[in-house]
Amino acid sequence: MDVENSKAQMKKGILEYCILSIISREEAYASDIIDEMKKSKLLVVEGTLYPLLSRLKNDGLLNYNWVESKSGPPRKYYQLSNEGAKFLEELGQTWKELAAAVSHITNKKN
Image (cartoon, rainbow, N blue to C red):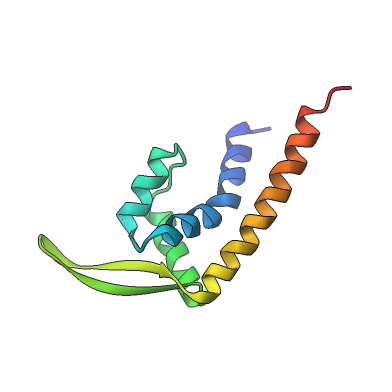
């Protein structure tokens, strides 16, 4: 069994929750999201992030606006939509329940 594959699948499952959480604090540019994820030791590459941001936007969970840049082309900044905020709240509750259940199971003594 490949432990790296299992670890990747675990990270993939929480990626959406983490990205929405970052954007919920303030509007974010894609590289801001990548930097925040790196600081938390949860690495994500542009090839994974951009399709996910597009899907979240198409699902009505994100909005974006273009902001002129002093050093290049305009930048797309993402923010949560009202629907996205509700979705994030539900994910947060599910995460708390899941984390508590996993903690209970993995810390249980025989």
